[in-house]
Amino acid sequence: MNATIHLRGRILLVEDGADNQRLLRMQLSSAGGSVVSALNGQIALDLATSQPFDLILMDMQMPVMDGYAATIELRRRGLTMPIIALTAYALAEDRDRCISSGCDAYLSKPVAEEELLEAVNHYLGICVPDERAGEGIARLTSSVDADHRSDCIRSSLRDDPRMTEITGEFVESLPGQVRKMLDFLEQRDLLGLQSIVHDLAGSAGGYGFAPITQPARRSEQSMRAHDALEHVAVQINSMIKLVRRIEGYDESKELAVAEKLEE
Image (cartoon, one colour):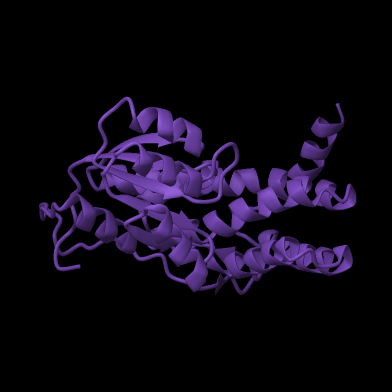
């Protein structure tokens, strides 16, 4: 960017994944946006019809009411603010479905920070350079930075001081997610498993762990395609091996989570 983007506007962020919500909220708020969060389309509908917003960022895959249904209903009620779709899928038919539902634009998760801010800024119609112009905003790059001593996967955003705390929280949550995935797999609960993998596919790259994104997305697509459980299990276990290589991952916490779940 030629100048650091400074957002001025009230943004409704509709995202059911806690990690994605935390990340996107931080990025939007750091750029000056005033952000209100909603966990699903029904809550977004209630908020958007009772409060003024300049723009909505709408996750399209959510429980209770998904982004497609929420967007259609918002447009039916006459709301005209820009709506930018967020989805883990980048297929042409997914984009077409978003636009036909009433969205103005489409971003595929994980969304690079610069791409996110440029899209939001474009639809807000405001671009104000601030005093940090020239510093730029960190790009979310796809890379594996292996520690030669442990072959660990390190966040490509580890040098961004804004990311330190929330990346630590994300890594801290991973053993619990892995334990739940293993339990769901053992129980043959593919709906529960797919929900966790979906969130991971959408959030890992945003925290700088891009090597996790594609394996998670492939695993989710296998479950959506109703592939054999044996095939899904191979993909899930392969992905879990990668997750366990993330710098700071504490495998001993998987046992603690398992014991807590048994209580």
